[in-house]
Image 1 (tube, protein in one colour):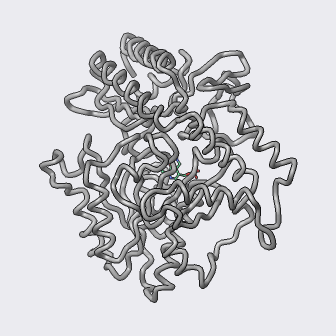
Image 2: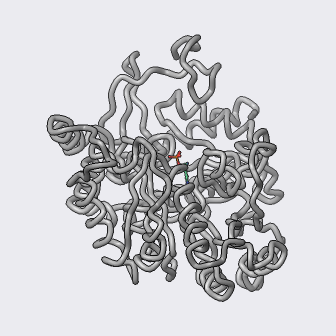
Image 3: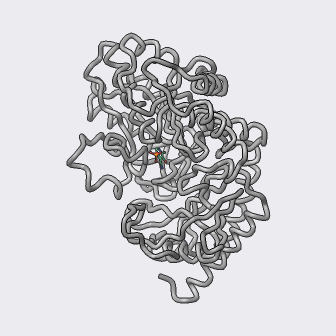
Length: 442
Ligand code: PMP
């Protein structure tokens, strides 16, 4: 571990992070020569194609040699156009070759853009009162001040609430800790039916859209919604004159075994936000909208020009990333390895009472650590201690706080991970849990 740094502001200001020296495949090395498995694909599912993939620096260098920036108010660039065409050709359902993409920087920006487009759409449609974006508690759509207002991750928003106009939220679709204390399918999808209540409370004339992640990543650690949930939400949005925004920051491009998670949900969103994997480590995000919505908004143009929209360097990398995913058939690999990982985690659960829940899909898996499996009482301190032990043993993991007290591992290694590497990761988790419990827990 290095000394805490005095001048650079890092994620935790006071934490003596090891300093990274190099990365390759699923591994990271620090400056002391220690090797770690990257158990979370970068801290937030960013490095899906793995580290040190040669095609990425090659694409970056080629583009930088040609030009790395251009005056976007008077020129276009070929990589941007190529990437937008590629995304349109990959998009499923009615969006295939009938959508438009706006490229931007971070996932938070893409959320913002989706919300702005929803607002602009209703203005153009002559319904200027529609401005509310309904969201969900325990959901995360970014850290910009607006993105935070529609996100329901308490720790990231509480301090800032006086600074934004809070948007209404409904409870999450979270079967392990069901808000309504019901069980699927007897619940009859109450978590979906409450959308109607929220619409009535806000007034349908005021509601522009509903936003959700297909599988909640950061705020619920890999929690998929129950079967039928998204179809019910899409139907309600259509009935009530609202747009459906899907935030696929964590789920797009292979992690769930397909280019887009919504392929599996049986719904097509009106607006879609993408980021993380797409940039292969560079900041690149995108907001995709159907041709119909884009056509309606075209009249006024999209009124949100910033310095780093449509940049060629990340677009060139985005093309290289999508190429690697297709060439190496990583979508299929994510399903096979995801099943292998989930089976391994379920076996680990048999050995350790403190593993309350194993959930997720593909290579986006969550492991909730609890005091005991029957009470489901959360134990964040224990979770943090085991996570630190994993790091000492060579496995870097992302621990997510779900609600206020609980601790869940979000396990999302690069999609290139092998069975042997998964086995090694599972061994480390097993050893770390055993050792910390033997020492008396948290
Ligand atoms: N949406 C989701 C679903 C995310 O998980 C995140 C980041 N964890 C974001 C948006 C924000 O992305 P960024 O950190 O690139 O701003």
